[in-house]
Length: 216
Image 1: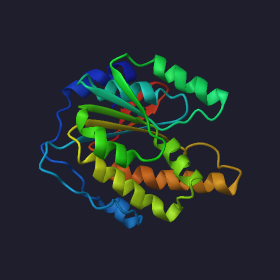
Image 2: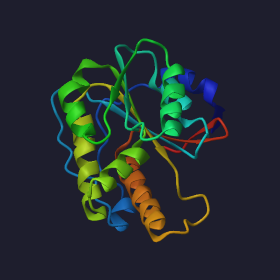
Image 3: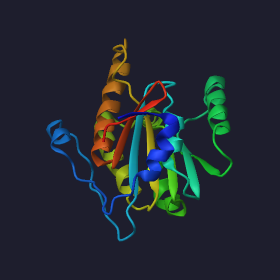
């Protein structure tokens, strides 16, 4: 079903959080050799995990805010860093698009640590975006082989909250093949990370031209 992004909030309101957290791997990712990490369940009310994917300027960030719903307090966790003027401008525009009741945290790398220490304070958490998080990890010499473990730690940390958690990421696999070897490597890593998270997610959406397609 394809719906306008503006209808995403209404859809989110109709979606009831699951009574149990679905964190079991499906056969597809198992065949692909993807580890989902060890998910530690707690006695708290389970979190709801939503993955939002889309290309650049597809409307995915706005869709994520709408899918997050209205439950307060709300936190927006930004992984981007203002390393140049262009990125600083993007960050300012994203901040201006959010209402003042969103608490903003800048967490370039340690998402799991932030969720464990502060996630319990919020009923709604949007993390934008995973692609920059992966880039930050690579810049700090986290190897491709270690990425599934890092993602598993992130999924474990999400399970320690009782929040509605929305993860935003760039879908890199639909464009031209990157010219550089490093670019192709990063595209492949991101694709595997998306599969790993989608396996554990309660809902997955793909955003195209401001339209929202629910794929799980």
